[in-house]
Picture (cartoon, protein in one colour):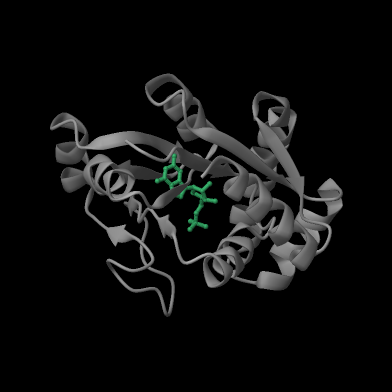
Length: 185
Ligand code: 5GP
């Protein structure tokens, strides 16, 4: 493996997807892992692009066969995991491999791939998350509440990470992330 992998973790609605999209636009060497999940696709999401949408039994098989680099139950409901093989292939190609995972996943990668750089994306304040989540409108009130509970736990763990990037301004945070990644890769 020639380049290290990067783990990107952060609470719900902190803007991870936007930051990652912008980074990829500016740094073509970035390869983003496509996770498997047992949750249903949201409108507009495409299987094999946004996620691999799999059944519970298929997810069980992927775990049993050792094909998951890490996996976790996220927000207390659905399972999400990183297929191992594509990550290995990306690293072998010399790509900058990015894994977007939750806190439990980040902790597993810390054990199995300690050379990976772990980055936490934080909001300027907790209240921003609630506001952004409501504005996004993709989750109902119950799911929003569940995600905000998870977010509290995640924010309390920010110190475990190699870098904490505050998403106070999308362009600035993108630059900071890119400079971290370029300084390692
Ligand atoms: P969403 O359902 O909003 O697409 O994703 C919810 C959360 O699941 C993400 O914010 C991320 O923290 C987590 N997640 C996505 N993919 C993975 C994965 O492959 N492994 C783990 N552990 N968490 C993931």
